[in-house]
Amino acid sequence: MGDNRESRREKERENYADRQKSQKQKNRLIAAGVIAGILAIIAFAGYHYYEKITGTGTAMSGPPGAGKLGGEHEHAAILLRIFGDKFNFALPEYQVKSPYIHFESGNGDTIHRHAGNVQLGFLFKSIKIGFDDKCLIFPDKKPEHTFCDNADYSFKYYINHDKVSKISDYVIHDDDRILVVYGNENQTQVDNYLKELDGEFIQKK
Image 1 (cartoon, rainbow, N blue to C red):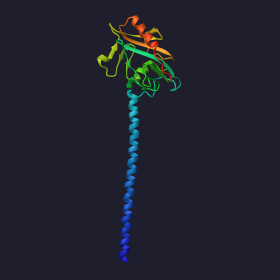
Image 2: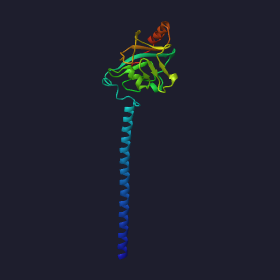
Image 3: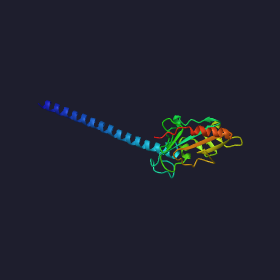
Image 4: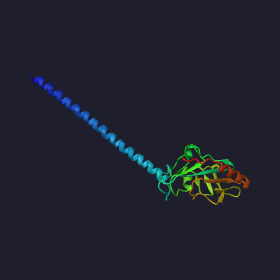
């Protein structure tokens, strides 16, 4: 009898010890999961903060002075020609980089503006193209991808057929047509570009 009682007690102690060990392992796994979740949240927040301060994100905050996102929805056609070649804003790297102003749906001819007081300069900034009305600089900043006014070539800007000196601070309105030309084209060539721009379909949705 005594041996049986002692044997039962030993088994109970072993079962208890096993339960305690199992519970501790479970607690450690839970704690590890919680810590991993907290670290993931911190990493996520840190990454997006980095994007914001370095300008490498999607420009979710919008430009200073921008109106309420979704408060407006304006559309304009744009044509950019560099040495006669049409620039393709339909490429994926130029599509929907900011909710405030962008190209979308694989279309590179129509600008969509979704908030008030969002200037064209912010559109170029959001797609990582440096633009200050005198220079157009692509992200790789290679000499062959840097275009600036000089003695031989210059920028010309037209908004609805009217020649203007700059467009970086312009806020598009519905059905605007914007021509940007870099080169040494004569007026006949520019007029042909304007006709081409007039024929562009403005995507509205």
